[in-house]
Amino acid sequence: MDKIQDLLLKTNISNDSEQMFRMKPGRSTEATAKCIYGECDGSGLIYSIKEDGQEIARVCKCREYKKQLRRIKSARIPTDHVDNTIKDFQTEIYKKEESVSIARYAKKVASCYVEQYYEMEDMGKGLYLYSKTKGSGKTRLSIAIINDLIIKHKVKPIYISVVNMLNEMKNSFSNKETNVNSYSLMESFKQAQVLVLDDLGVEKTTEWSEEVLTQIIDERMSYKRPTIITSNIPISLLQQKYPVGRIKSRIEKMTFPVIMPEESIRELLAKQENDKIAEMFFK
Ligand SMILES: [Zn+2]
Image (cartoon, rainbow, N blue to C red):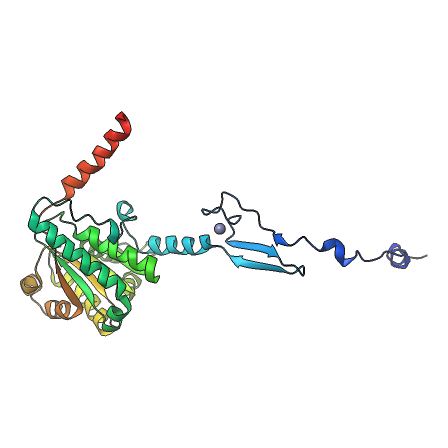
């Protein structure tokens, strides 16, 4: 007795003609709201059929957008600064005339730094944003710079305040259960393509904290990795803050100094935000 398979083989089943499978030329990926540009189905690929029936795939721009988002996420930029760019850095918000011109100069330096980033990277040059006054825009401008570096040059930076960095290091020693060990934490700060060290000098100096900072700065200098520092201490007085040794001279060599206004705009920015809300409520 023939097996059913053999019988089937003998019956005359023909192949479907190639023609039947040939799809109409044109786009075959549906554009949906899952893509922020409304151009693909969220997969990041747009398939289309050529005249000869061949299927081709193009990369949708939402894929690069998602990559950028990942860079911003791994840069650890505080949420309220995620959208900061140099273009949006307000120089006219300062009340003192002198502050406005200082802020304009700082903004100009920031744009030039981003424009000429590759030369800066070759030289291992970062920036040192200084003003005695808190809330004068140092953090905002330093983050605006790395946001622009992410957008324009696909740089992978890390932002961290010095106090948080030292705390994280300390916790990684004391808490054996965390996945982060102090070694890999230290390496991430040493090796970041660009590192922002925010608020250098507000931490309490100990032999240990100075040693940690020295190691990070030392290695970044040796490998010419740019470091952007903000501080309430002028470079000339760093030796008093870090008496053991090499921090001041290293920073002097690794950074271009940028003076920031001696005027706090924190309250003004908060007021501006509330004025906007009032407008939304009562218009
Ligand atoms: Zn897309």
